Image: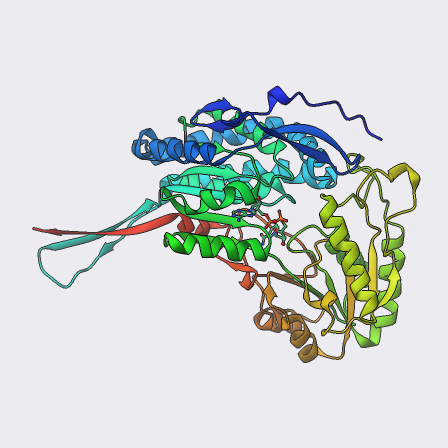
Length: 488
Ligand code: NAD
């Protein structure tokens, strides 16, 4: 096991109004290391008073210096922040892996790329332009301004804590909003260290506020607070629905990035040496705990046996172990209830008659017995009607579904309430052009999988949510257009 130095509780403070603070009640809660199964950090447990203080600080900051600061000065602070994150990337990655158990290689990659988002959106801050409208009335001048919304509440899940917050914070700040961010109660530690960098970069007090606590205790207050103008949420679809309903009371703007049941489609003409590892890493690399996990492998019937055999062979050799070890390929599940959920789904799939080809249980290896592991699990001959083909497991479980031809592949892929992503493996150029048009999903990858960039829009179709993160247009999720009329 890689050494895990203890973390002093006094280092973990929330960020409210530019000050490092404990919760008003002084309460803290334990954060667990999913590899050791033990509490490793004590995080402030915010209550309603802390939400109110954070929103007050954010609205004061919005009406204060941040509002009058030039857009290029805002952008420069964001660039300074990016530099600080780059310096701290390794430490942040280790904190994330200890807190959520995801592979260190993945968290290193995410923390290394986070500065790009702040540089990109920081660079956009002074390129937000209005328009002149040629009104049909002599002597009347009409122009538009793009203005920030106000206080943005960012609510994020446990699987990629800093990255998914960055997707919200970077465009929202560039647009001139202020922030109250509540990370998941299962992975708050890295957020509190990130918070210290906002202070250091020179953001005015209260522009970014970070409060830690439980969704069921403070989430609703944050969403319904009258001074919150917009809620940017990533998480499960049940929570997303609640957030949407609560936000409706105040007619707040909302973006929702929710779950998925993404199809990764392999045609007989695919380059199998790329497709097989692509499918395996598409589901198992993050132990299935990404919204874009390719949890349904759709395989053309003529190569079904061959592909299935290779997938099982490849996944069988994946190294399960300490997520801090760069050699590890499959880490633990982030939370204990989530492991129970994954094991329940494996039971359901067996009960429904899917053929279990690999895994299906907690690993027997005693050296990792304290961790919350589930073996990489593969089910063959899965039918679309089965729950394992319809519901998001959010764990290392792959369902393989055969299909005959393009039409059937599209029909199966689209037969889902979700529409977050899809993968397509083929060497047929025509098919690579035709199918992305027909697949109902916000991201389509052809001969690759799980790529995202600050340059390219990301978001869901259907019940995977709405609104887009990343790319130039994401900034408009945090702006509103004002029309100004002047009569000469
Ligand atoms: P979750 O819905 O349980 O929690 C997400 C956040 O919502 C947490 O911060 C939680 O504290 C908060 N929350 C809980 N109840 C709330 C309430 N009533 N009001 C306001 N906030 C509340 O999700 P999770 O289990 O942390 O994350 C896993 C889910 O996130 C999966 O379904 C996954 O697909 C989804 N996800 C989606 C994307 C995407 O971009 N589409 C990315 C990653 C994860």
